[in-house]
Length: 169
Image 1 (cartoon, rainbow, N blue to C red):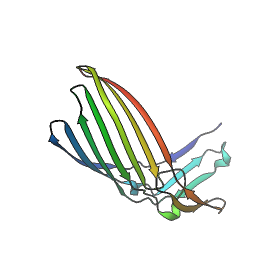
Image 2: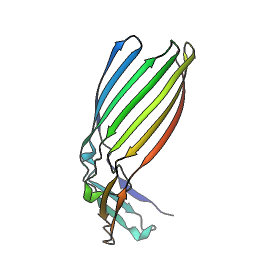
Image 3: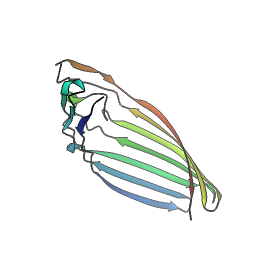
Image 4: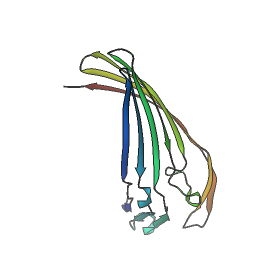
């Protein structure tokens, strides 16, 4: 057993959004997120001598800053039941010659749908489903230690169900 040290700067986010109520039962919203992935220049990991004889990883990343675009709508079907629908487009921060499966590597489209039910005035049950698909992308990267190039066609699909319960007081 041993230890390792690693440094991974996380991106800063700056969000700007707006919502509008065109009718009593409808709320629509839009948002743009500016994500500072440009802070992620390298992944550096230094293992202790007990692990891999002190091997270190210095993997260049050179990510770029990006935007995420979001749209959403809520329809109040009754005073206790709301329907939700949304979509987002998430740009990839990864340049083609740094493409690998460990991090956000392709542009993605997300579609969400759900509902909120309030059986009591201060109690709510929320149910949602998100579907995310990545726009397939070809790319590769070269392992710094072995010099071997890893490449392929990357794509992603995910379904994410969720249930939430809240109580306001």
